[in-house]
Length: 263
Image (cartoon, rainbow, N blue to C red; front, top):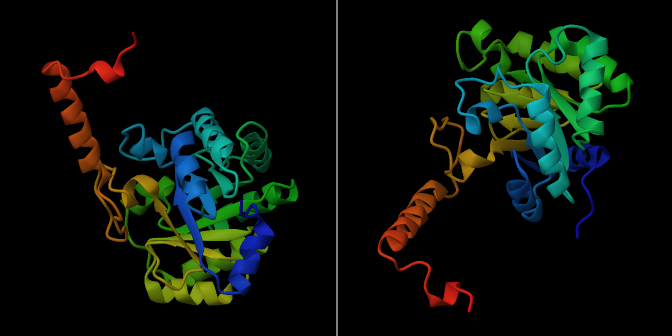
């Protein structure tokens, strides 16, 4: 089995210009599959609110729900670095609360690190959590927890603000930063300026790594598929077909057949 991916390993990959491969997953079964496929990093994202729970955004997701799903993925991962996504209002109020909630991801969820959204405004929280010995991944650009403030899921184009956000989260102690919904040229500049790895999602090919939601890239999602997603399989079609054949066999008394029965 390949060596476990660590944070120093991610830094080394940036230095050597080796691309980091990340996915967002939410349970044990897909965590196992992602890990076996050689994925470097698995984010247990609060996007589970939309992908798993069927909500319209990520805002209602709770800490307990995030810990529950993070634990499932962490138990599956043998090689990949597991990051738990801090949900809305788990870190914004005050540093002490942010540290306690981040600690839960490590102690109860089995994660190696946590992720939180925001740039300059959350840098004090990043510094506080990092100072407590908990690795932090930052997330700037299109930040879904700010969907109401942004007026929807919109590409972020304010280069000056984005660069400042990136520099501030690095200075605060983030070990890497997700760049979401950012024009390629801006993401390229940020990647070149930072010492920590950038992980892109809708931010072009120059980022040090890429992340996609597993359900999106495998064609399992029934929701809108963003422009930045490449679908490598259409598993929803296969699942529907398989379930349909099962239903037909049961209704026609073809299943269970003798080979599926005990004497």
